Amino acid sequence: MIQVLAIDHIVLRTTKLAEMLRFYTEVLGCAVERETPPETGLTQLRAGNALIDIVVVDSRLGKMGGGAPTQSERNMDHFCLQIKSMTEQSILDHLDAHGIAHEDFASRYGAQGYGNSIYLEDPEGNVVELRCQLEQFNAALPSQSRV
Image (cartoon, rainbow, N blue to C red; front, side):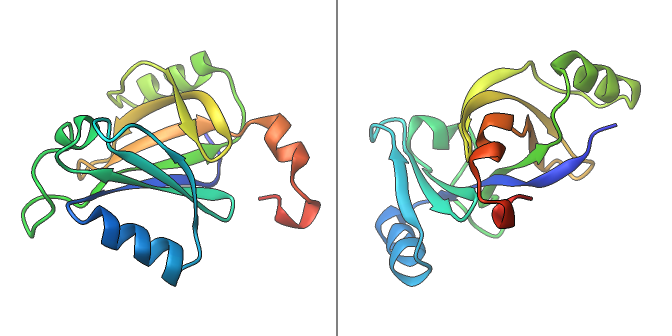
């Protein structure tokens, strides 16, 4: 069975990158952790043990999520859950047993660095990413910060 430990990251889509970065860094105190080239369109902000990813709508990544955020277009691209470590095959078997369609595992950057993850959708069509908690990251956290 899958056991959720924490939210790893959320991905917000924007047409107002400067304003979003100002809000999340100056108002909420997040730090820019990683930026991709502008054509890719991703800025990752550290939010405690998690990340907030800001994706520019007209970038390569942003175009994959549809139109600009409006009342009829979504603002959140997906959210990622850290789950208790288990084999990729166990996760696939669990999802398949429940009839949940999914993509293949791929290496992606998250709150704990690079690791394999998988995308699926909930019944409302929200995209959910699952990635196992990386044990070496968890061991490096102070005990009061562990989830």
